[in-house]
Length: 464
Image (tube, rainbow, N blue to C red; front, side, top):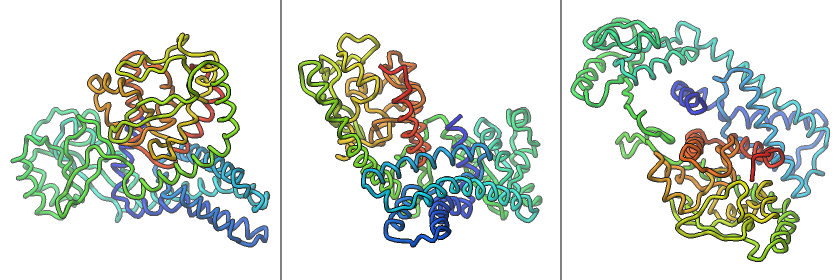
């Protein structure tokens, strides 16, 4: 459901460039504006710390999510979650840098209370404006689908859902009269493929989506020649749903259109945002937890013989081998071709090791891996090299999770897939969540995962 909802949203919101642009600046703009207005209300001068805070907030929230297509309740929950996560990060920054004293408590309190209310109001009004604009007759666009196979069903359903953005799905053309589109999406069958171009020309159709299989290439070429004789926009939808699409997008390579099927989400500015957020957060967290690191290190040393830090070979970005650090929690240090996974009541786990594993304190040295650039705070959890060799041939698209840096925590872990994966089904479920993270990455999603991880550290009773 998580992936399908985001696919549908991306499908029918992509052409709305103005809406996307407004959404990108809406959240960071409103957060900064509310802070400045509240400061002015309390007659506070805008000094260098205030400007630094505004720049930090803008960097952490840009680009903002497009919530105009969300239901009001879903938008409210998403805004509240993202805002609380951001406040937590800012509070940690202020505590670590001892800069909270630069700001008036009243200003911070009213800013914290008013911002989510203003954000939700702006999203609610924007949604109403979008609906009103789309309802105007001059802004409505008529769309048809040519081809009524499984892909035609997906496209027709997406077009029906796109109705609130100003698209009216008129129906489909296919040489078969008894296909699934008619029963599932319930549009009218407008005719055969030969009827498509005359209908488009005579009925003011604005958008034509061709969903015929690639095996029908001569028919596609003939249809394109006919439909291009009209004023309608023509879209060819390639049938790529049989494979796992990661960050699918259309790119231009010196005038040649290239369809990206499997790509990392961290390209361009996304890569910069991800790395900067990792460095800032990891540095602050290490400063805050330094007493905990020292205490755990002493506990490991006194509880059993052996090194304090356990170094294990893992596969990182692009499958390259990296060394990951953890506090040692076992009597043995398996790091060879066969690495047994830790299980409940595992005799290799020391009593103190059981405690730090249950509370995830054994993972804390990995924040140094983040500063090194080997890992990220949020991403697919790294598996032992031996486990990767085992599962890469058993699970479809398993190695795709290595298109990003491994993380200390991840989308799979906060959704219950933490710990031992003693069956192929458990590992399959974990991989599916990892791939969903790659498809839907945003800084807001990272903050949500971090907030949920903090909750799990204190309340997860299933960890061992």
